[in-house]
Amino acid sequence: MFLSRLQLEHFRNYRELDLSFRAPVTLVQGRNGQGKTNLLEAVYYLATSKSRHVRTEREAVDRAAADEPIPYARIRGEVLRGEESTTLEILFTLRGDGLNYTKQARVNGAPRRSMDLIGHLRAVLFLPEDLTLVAGSPSERRRYIDVALCQIDRGYCQALSRYQKVVTQRNSLLKQLQEREQGDSAAVAAELGFWDDQLIELGTQVYTRRHAYLADLAPIARRAHAELSGQQETLSLLYLPSFNTGLYSELAYQRLRDGEEVEADGLARQEVDAAMIGQRFRERLEERRSVELKAGSSLYGPHRDELVFLVNGWNLRAYGSRGQQRTGALALKLAELQAMAEATGEKPILLLDDVMSELDAQRRGALLGALSDVRQGIVTTTDWAQFSADFQMAAQRIHVVAGTAAPAPAGM
Ligand SMILES: Nc1ncnc2c1ncn2[C@@H]1O[C@H](COP(=O)(O)OP(=O)(O)OP(=O)(O)O)[C@@H](O)[C@H]1O
Ligand SMILES: [Mg+2]
Image (cartoon, rainbow, N blue to C red; front, side, top):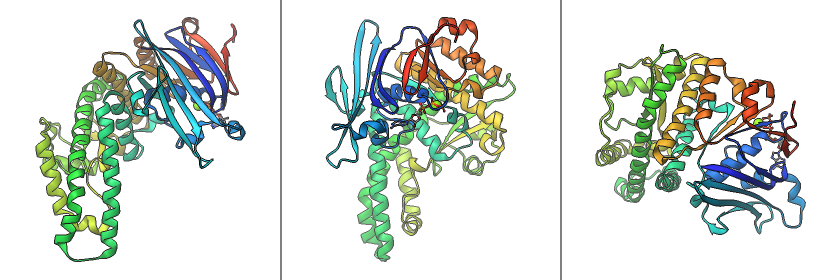
């Protein structure tokens, strides 16, 4: 797939933009704060209907536009797939409350749910902060898997969003029960029973899908990582649930949780049996009923799971150097790109936000390799000199200043 045109109105610091993409690689240069990330965000919005940075729709709309009589923002893109062209659009309009914005999606002009945008344009976005994924918090790593999976599996996205609602509902019930401090365990069990069933059913779906995704990613990431580390290190990517679902030996599970070295054969991965997982999940909830009641929140399930990186059996988060952690994150990112291409039969668009400057020559080479392998890449930089003359010659070069983008003049 190829994004041939991007139009923005009042999106972030872009009042009006109409950009056509022609070359496999677009190189976007601009000084700090001029709109490079915003440009990639707009493309990413069309792909995922979400943003990596913007927390509310309101932040997507140009601050200056908020004072206009009818404030709005629009992102529109044209995607080419073979002979077929699809127009995707997201429109942000002010709600009746005069404060918040709603998001409306359109595909070829027809209104659609924002979830239905997914699949028309697939993108892998690589931000400098992704390089700290290994050292970051578990919630960042969960979010990472979720965003990647949602683009290739709409069913997953639906199950996940239902699961998250169930967790919220169940938490508020646990909190109420905690405040009531009542001892009638039969009544408690009955009230919680309904939410337990939901939690187990949806949680098992989320778990098994994430587990399978990690199993797909792991060998690809391992190869990428071996290459990046000069065949010196072996990367294992593991999905570590919030309780032992039976896929790890009890010893291996405990050691993984504690961040201790793990024997490779302790990790023998069986086929995931959803019924077995569901059963374990139920047993766990029953065993820990009083603990959850005391905590007043749901302590088990995919919202508490972890993604673990091991290098030669050692936990990369606990023991890796900064450089090793970054290599692990880069390997994961390269694996995500390839896994998405394999799962969908199409190469996604690669969006690189000023990451080259963060990498040494060898890792930069790996990323340039990935870039030459996709049909379309959009790369931002503050400094043209980061790219060779040949690379620049082959690329479409765009210069961004204060929310305007124009072809870069020769010799810049
Ligand atoms: N809703 C908004 N309305 C208007 N301007 C906005 C809005 N949100 C962000 N901006 C502006 O956009 C600019 C930042 O753009 P962006 O993050 O794309 O910069 P950048 O070129 O990636 O910079 P850097 O090189 O520092 O990463 C800032 O000047 C910021 O104030
Ligand atoms: Mg930026």
